[in-house]
Length: 507
Image: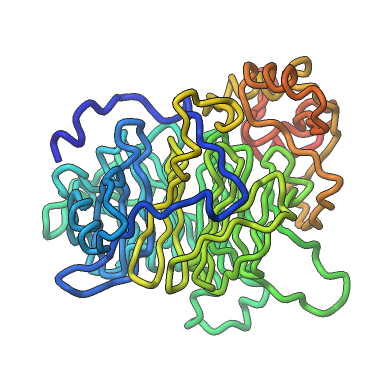
């Protein structure tokens, strides 16, 4: 374990260069299962609930797995075994460590502080901070009154995080604010700095029995890349709400896939099982219980979803999806026992189907620094997938490897998205008022143009090598004179705006 954690660099993930990713084709044969991990303890199998690859370049091969029995396990996914090796053999030799983190199910996990610590969100209504090397709890976050379904760390300050709970609230935490009191195990107790209750309520909440906590449950939370905005989604409907952490009296704005019904009949409501965002934070995905996954451009929320993906079955809130770090692919679990991968720019094309699981595929995760992915299932296994070896060439030619991208800081991202000469952008006026509770229809795939997510260098190469490309790019909202500034690109301080609420008001 000590050698595993040696050489960890003390810098944040934001601003790190993302390695070139292997090109992912449109055939299932492009993928190969390089390992199947059995999730069991003391001879008893248990379904995995959350999986997460470590985030730093030194440790990205390490996969954390949490399960229904409250155990947290770490595996080394670099281990190679012959095809005839059993799941038990692969699991035993790949396991780095495991321990009982909670005496209840662990619904979400999150790596922080350059992978030296792990956060676990549990059904026991607490979040624990773990020293990943010593398997020692260093803090307990207490304040929720329901199972904690989702946690997400601040993009640049790993002491800050947000959580969403089945009690209908989301909370903000600062790990530096420890109370003097300790619990029976002498673990430091931490209380939330802010808690917003009843953040997602059903329109019919007055008629819903109190026992049905799912009617207001928050299923997923995200800390956006600007570091001051939070996105939340719930079990009650498909609305994604956006909040300013400095002004939490009301949401800044919201987005959802369909407009409100113009008739007197109440439309059927579908909950959201998960949210995800790419490395640059420009795109956000929402898995909806109507068996669709919606893609939003955070810079253009007023348009509603710019893409939708179908083909998987999302019949429980355990089924998750995740966009790849480079925003090129979308990976999702499914209730039919398969995992699916779509090309983001080809939503109408049939997805790649990954088969081998015998139960509902729930959690999914991309390795942040290569083409490896992991899928978890109710068949008590976690499978590691890799691009076939023939897709890896020593020359790493541009035709077989995706372009390099950078997780840019806010200022650099603003300059990049505003650069009209390099990006070849066209003005797109838009406006949105925070009090407008209007949902938007999905734009026709044929009329959508998606902004580029890449560095200026790669843009120059793209235009020089793909001169016949028909792809067009839109200018960001702040480019228009009467448009609001975006969540990701706050206006200059000279404008003296105080909250993100102002970013969505027309000039």
